[in-house]
Each structure stands twice: as C-alpha cells, then as structure tokens.
Image (cartoon, rainbow, N blue to C red; front, top):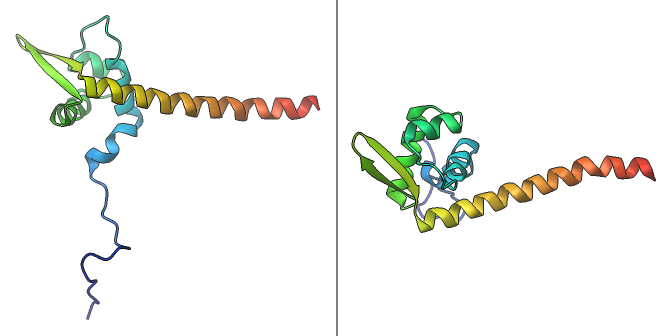
Length: 119
C-alpha cells in the first residue's frame, strides 16, 4: 500500500503555476520589452512578428497579462491595441534590469580570458 503524506508539511513544495514563471522566459520578456517602445501602436500581430513568436503565443501571453493588470487592450474597430499599465511598465523595467545584469556578467566573462593573456 502506498504511503500517504500528511498535508501541510513544510518540505512539500507546490509546483509553480504557469502564470508565475511566464515572465522570465525569453519570448515573454521580449514581448514586454517591445511594449516599452511607445512610438508605435502594438497589435497582437505586430507583437508576434517583432518578437519572433506565433500569434497564438502572443495572444495567450497578453491575455494572461491583461488578467494580471500588466497590460490593457483597447479595441479600435476589429483591432486591439496593446499597452502596458503602470504596473506593466515597472515590471518591464525590472526585466530590462535583469537582462542588463546578465549581459554585464557575460561581458565580464568574455573579458576575463583577455585580461589573463596580458599578464
């Protein structure tokens, strides 16, 4: 007979929900960062094309973002214009910061072998 685990144990970890881990995946991050470009209107199709994702993927992600208050979608006839909310702008800044830190680390790693050769 299989052993039953008692509920509420501290060592049991709940699996993260998809919505909780979506934002640091590359395609989702690219969509968020694209939305920070304010000099154009973003439609689902233009977001998908600019970020090299499928229309369905962009639509699913934007729907999740709308639900969480990260983006707003305004209908202009048959077309939806996607914009970041204040919360979305803050989140996009944080994502950009994470990518900036990662790029700095990569640059340091690239430069390290060059510095060792000079010595």
